[in-house]
Length: 160
Image 1 (spheres, rainbow, N blue to C red):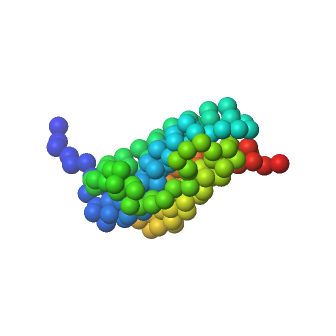
Image 2 (cartoon, rainbow, N blue to C red):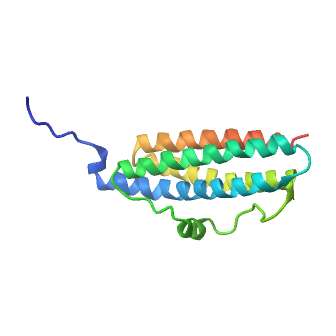
Image 3 (cartoon, helix red, strand yellow):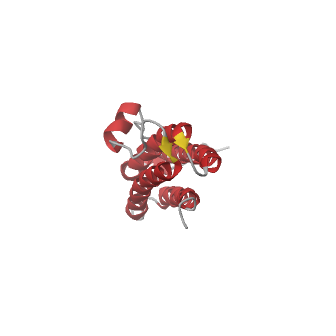
């Protein structure tokens, strides 16, 4: 039996650095959505309460899973990811989600605004990763598709 070294993209620092550059903002936005989505879930009131309240749990679960997917891609390539609450707060800044009770239409608009900001970061990652790492780009594409689906479900509560 021969001793073979298995080559990985983790050994390419350019790929790792490029992936971290483009996926880190996505991870931070998704981590913020996880917290802010739960805040919205607890405080939604009014029309469509149960549908919005329950779907926000789905949004939170999806955001957490997407953040994990992107963060694990960065780590798999050999770099750490700093997604501590202080780092998230520095990146995201003010959220659209309020601190107290709000009517469902206001909650939905706030969460959609937060999702839109993450979609913009994800689109930038898709474009930037095209020249860096196609596997990482696929991660970003999958995240964007999921975010757009959650956004559509929320928006459908507002559409007349």
